[in-house]
Image 1: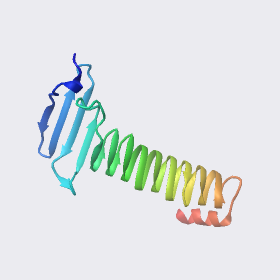
Image 2: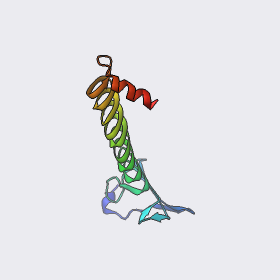
Image 3: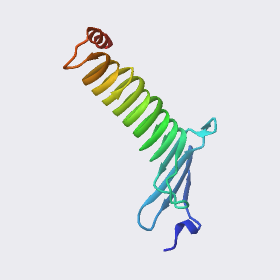
Image 4: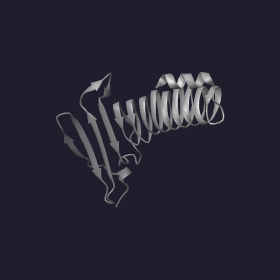
Length: 168
């Protein structure tokens, strides 16, 4: 077998009513798949999905769309191992408004490590309002917390208690 990067790649192209699938099956059994919807919004496809490594480049294709799904994704709603968008979901999710995942950022963030401008929920949470096992912020509800108003097993600030009870 020759180097695919030096050969013309024969994709299986499938046109659907809503978009185009581009697929390739490597001789080893690995696969590459990409879907782009025909409809766009400000030049971005409404949906862009990628899977596997591109046989032409040997690299992963970044999913870019209003809804982007792939190992690496960027869009308004980005879902991927590494994602960036207004709403981001992934192992490393950099969300402008909302981040969900393992290591996340955003105005609102929920994840194992959550860094937020306003509300952080996570095992380690940092934000103006922080809820987590270890948390830092202005209003903190945590097992171990640091901030102006902390409610934890070791500290029970009445302002923090009133604040978190009012959220319920």
